[in-house]
Image (tube, rainbow, N blue to C red; front, side, top):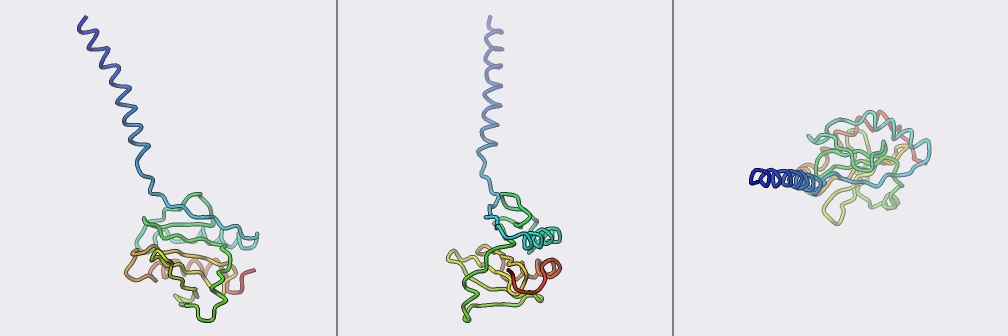
Length: 163
């Protein structure tokens, strides 16, 4: 009778252990980034899809880890993530003649420092607006991610004025 009772308890403990492991696995923090997916017109969407195909696997030494929801209009690298969104709406700050701009490897960018210490860069004079958000403290040189994505932007998004 003792051996039956011992087996009975062991059998009951196994499902409890499996349940505990499952719950612990599901409750771990999800560190995947999220990004709002832009909704541009068909021409810009095609440019953004082409850009997605030529984006680098690494930016600023970080591996590509695309944000949720998955889309060819968004990309991400590292954690905290450097986020790229293609086909964004033209920022109102581009109307300000005092706005800060930079040129990185032949791609012009509008520079906007955010309240949380991050930086948002949006391409200028391209057929699609491409936005890159760099989290606070991501790099010593905030331009490094732009250096890495500039060749892809030059290849996939022609110069001009976005519709």
